[in-house]
Image (cartoon, rainbow, N blue to C red; front, top):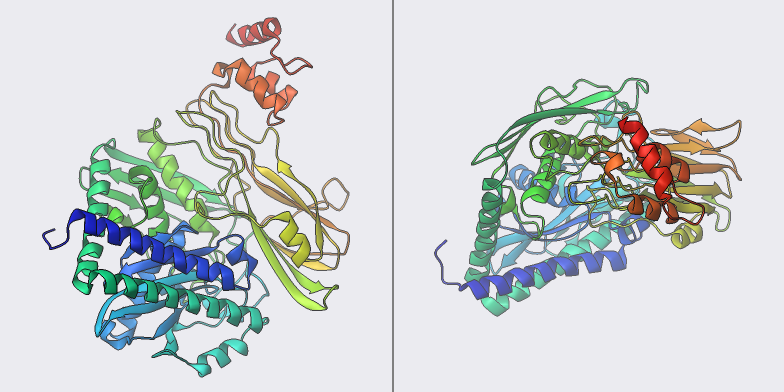
Length: 575
């Protein structure tokens, strides 16, 4: 673009905007009531230009940041245009089909004005704890949006800097835990005000025209980088499918996700037509959410080393069918958005057909989340705590998959520490560690998943959010599948029960185990370096038995390779 700014000025402003987004995140984390926010970083934060396109973000849930663009644009359209927004206004949006997420993933945003000129928006999305959804904590079996909570279609929390008490009263009388819900929303308000102030300070230093020009240059450069990377990708069309365990109603009927990816000189097309539709339960995803997961995979493939800006996604086109599980329309239920988490691996599975040297095998494939709730006998108050667990990542052409890291949909997130859970909730963690042998065998091993075992000290409920347990994490190039995710109550007893995707009640003293999946293996396991297998055995990632049966490697009692026995074992398979 032509303009008055030098490249140096644009770069200084770009970093200042990134700092502004980081300040939004810090303000939020310091004031939120909910550990899901300040410990796990279950948030999406952005500074956007006047069109609603993101120019700077703070890493959290990757799907949220891209979804905020979509939500802001829908809100502006609903409100009648940007002229309807005044300085000091703050808006709240949780209508799923516009906001790109379910009712509890609340988007709060504020316009940024320089004098009378609207130059952008500050956004902050988090998971709040309760807005009158039919079940406390999470809804797994709704059949309609009308069971999923109270909706706010871009309403003003603040007008000209003054609180809209009527809206807060509605929230207070429509939440089981109003203090924490309102506290979290107010933390969002404080955060976006911080983003507004910081961006206005950038304007005061550089001038409004320079900042607006820099925002445009940021997205132009982001698009240029994406198109340069797109030009280097293999061209073609590839398809794949995978399963969601169920829709939450028909628990024994899996739901199929189908995708066709086409890479041309000019476009990266993610076509979801053919995906199952007309399911009863709440696994449906609004279009903005599906666009967000398609965007995440595209960015990971093209511009993984630069911050998210809207220009990165200019070559991307997402195609869906309204009414399918990846394009919910009113009144389709949308509360259990795990479909969106699983969908990213389906895109990668399709791409692996055409570019196996660039794409890893499947990760454990899910965000295995346990949400516990009840009454804490220490305080007599209601409690609700949650955490997402790490998974193993898939092996790839360049090496092994990572062991026990957060799912690809949550690259900026963490899990909830043992100390926090045991302090906030009536529970103790009996065990927490890697799951040996959960990574798929291969020339490059799949990363292992983790296991966390909760022992409840008071009667409690647990919401077990995991929806990839029936299809194994897929391998590539002759590797072996990873081990599935699963949750089970009272494991090792005659009361053991599979609780994946269920809402279960546990008496004081009962136990719940959350076991996450390992990544798929890449390449023939018998081609793996025996020394690497022995190292995995010493690190308790692979058992002695699996080393022999899956890799053809005999590991001695001292943890070293028995060279003679290994040669014989591997030769026997070849013979």
